[in-house]
Length: 257
Image (cartoon, rainbow, N blue to C red; front, top):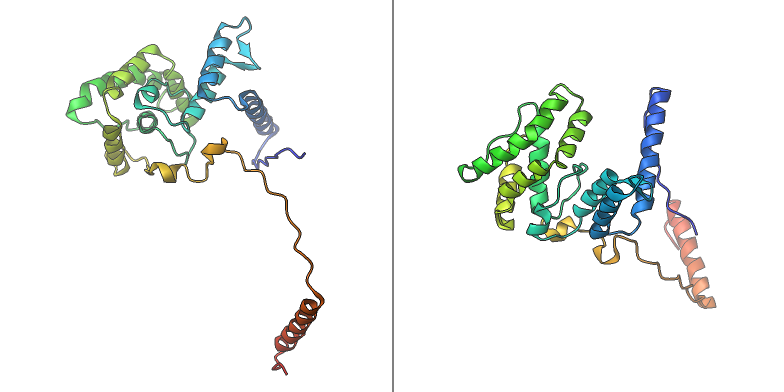
């Protein structure tokens, strides 16, 4: 049985760059093997087990790596509003990923906006106080990283900030009272440019999961064995030969006889 193969194209200007690509790919492969078919709850359990392990590892991954895997899986796992709002954003979603849970979309959008040079715009008056408390908890991490820091440094700082209990508490105080419909309204306003310059696309559930094969866990269905076509009778072969000759003559520009 052939195993799936992934081809990665990367432009490396030095041996150092090549070593970095190899290290990242090794980490990705190790994380994929460790995850296997584990769902969100099992991944969160692995994170707790790694934190309690003597060497801090479970299947070669530490607690932070298991939390990032759990966050990534949560983006494509349908959750209730109460469940989704309690999950820290240990990993910003990759570009073009369709998030299933609206409150996680708002969470990711606000976090990305904090990484912009001009910061993020203010929400409506009704939620401004709780939003400011959330910003006050997040901004020290941005200041630590420095506005002039490389984008990936600031991105990691924002992701790490979600491990802080105060950040998570302020986020739940701001987003927890919002209903799914209210979050959708906020996202629609953000898509229209109300929050910042980020480009946001909203999809309904059917379109967002199109082609995901959720009922099969994202796996391609087994192909049915091919059935050979029955042999054609002799007269059919003769007719086919006549048609082939006719096409050959017309291809030369001559009218068929």
